Image (cartoon, rainbow, N blue to C red; front, top):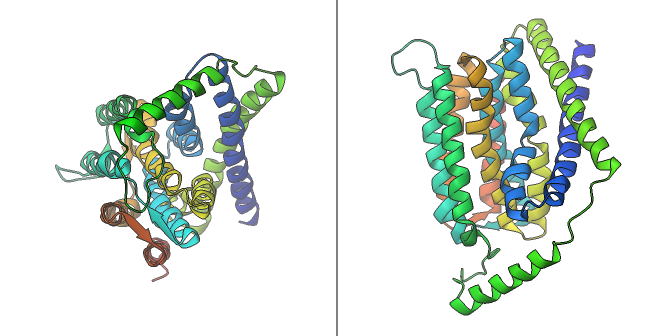
Length: 340
């Protein structure tokens, strides 16, 4: 048991580190070949921060333990809202929700959760299974999300709003466009790809591949030793570990009073988890949900999303709400582990 726990923790560490190495080099290479910073952000960066979940899911699919896939995605979404937003609100004192997040991201997050619930729910009775054609629907929905994000990028470009949530005037919009044009000129000198970048890219890919494999193996072995479902270990252990990058980024942003970064990081990660982390491995095989994930994880994810949307509409997420979110996460972990 001790050996398997060590393998789990070491694999989880290299999974997160490998994603960081891969992301940094891929981001630089994207800019070097001429991609715009916005395209790099909504593709490479949004994919990169969820690489641990994605590689774990793909490895689990080929290992035949598909229960890990939805448990990891649902667990990560729960952790992102209750743990990451909760701690960020406590660290920052309060999180200010901007108009663009309310108008665009909150509805998308809510719709994404409803679609995921609809795909998972066993409408004809029987077991909760995500079929291949349902996985295609999830991926198509994410494609529509990317297109929507691309065509509404101008609505996201004004940064965090002040206490009066001021809407930019035409003059301010023109000024912003001029500033962006200058920035685009400044990045004409694209960064050069070096040998170190290739080392990080290849090393990150290798670390992701092997750490994901050993992580899945250790989860299977630990579940057999403890006689618990693999989904239980995944929805807590893997989910917390793979959500650490989001926690660090969001907590740091909240401490620096950059609420939009702290919250936007969570939005992007949850949408990616719901559609891509489940969708891509679902193309290769049908995905099963174990009972703890379906009976406890799915309702808690829906509840957490609903609370997040309600808090977002109020335009402020205060520290007492962060404490409530964190307390609810502790209750969820205790319930899923059977502690009470």
